[in-house]
Length: 102
Image 1: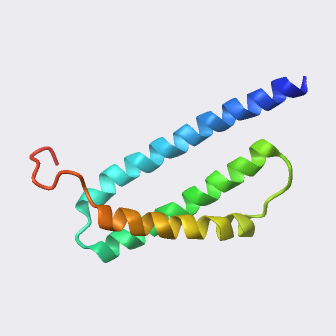
Image 2: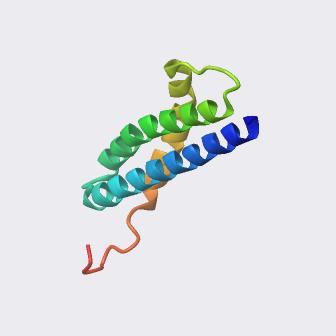
């Protein structure tokens, strides 16, 4: 019975994680190509990365169910990832700048 509950939790977590990735990729695809400069792109990436990082960290603790995590701990763990992700996506930029599709 415990194995079934664990597999159910993992399945729900995979669906939740896929939904988080889809939402994040949709938001980034709509926002990033329209950013006028790198500073505003960094701020938006960081502002989007923190809540998604918190949800991801909180969901991982929920699946493992080994301990409770406060929102402060989730924020502390999400800040470095959001910062590094914002730096990476700020200087990476859109893939096709001269395309007629954008």
